[in-house]
Image (tube, helix red, strand yellow):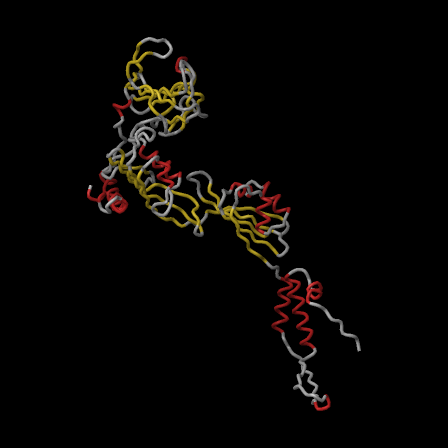
Length: 454
């Protein structure tokens, strides 16, 4: 009779296989071995061994189902799913470590493949999901990326195919929501949008759209004052409860110095082209922006003045906007480039030709934006150059001229020029959309229904 060796719990753990799958298979094999010898009879406790009745039992147990399950475990790989959020300062190595990925080939593929490499541009807080086997080899990697302000959201997947990896992308299935926010300006526009008074801050992309939407009526650098108020209705798109991107502003209202400006997005169902209109159907987008700079202050208006270099008293046929060197300059209206280059005293200069006999000139630029060659088409708000102090200039600023028939005019006298209005048929469809948005404004306004009464 062989002596019985005592195995402690720690020793038993050391003898067990290392991987989870191997441990399951080994345990099952032991169980089957016991079953193959049959069942063991258990006798009641007695004080005298001679009094214990002995009955041998030998019975073969058939357990085909358990055997099949163990065989299946031997063939199937164990798979694990991990999800993490991108942290500030993350590298691919640190991210893979948190995801439980121990796979040098996978790291190399993500770094070198053109499509997979886009996963490296994920912003802080974005989610990424990895599927691995029991040894940490990557089986798949998945995340949703959005490129640019209005870019489509794509789900990028990296998957193992044998010993190789492949990457593919597909449109993300996003949930669309419509959100409403209202704010009062107490110090600045951005401080108002950052507050969480009604459940959340307003994304910077939406703030930029608000500025663009009302910039034909409001100079957001000089016209805002404490007590101004705005409301906005806009789209957001979500994936698995996470905000992926913001969409279009559907409606907005800005009360500036007691004057209310309202707009509603309307899109022609046939052409899919749209724009913003007032609640009575007039095009909100004017032919020309009130200011070619987003944020600036007027340093010299359209008037007589002493020329800063010649010292002579002469008419100043334009508006000077003092701004830091490099500040983007926007096209005041849709048009084509009529001149781009050095204009002597004007320095680096661009002249845009618009509809009818209107044109605009932008002078003293530090540099002209790429693509601004003669004949190039530009759209209202497009960056055409950057503020500088070239030519006859004593400091960084933009010299802006509004010309009619080639002669400089005061731009403030032409700020009411508007685009073509809606047709009668379009106006009927527009009014249905405007009524819904006007109701939303009434809910956001102080007093609940004050907006609807106006």
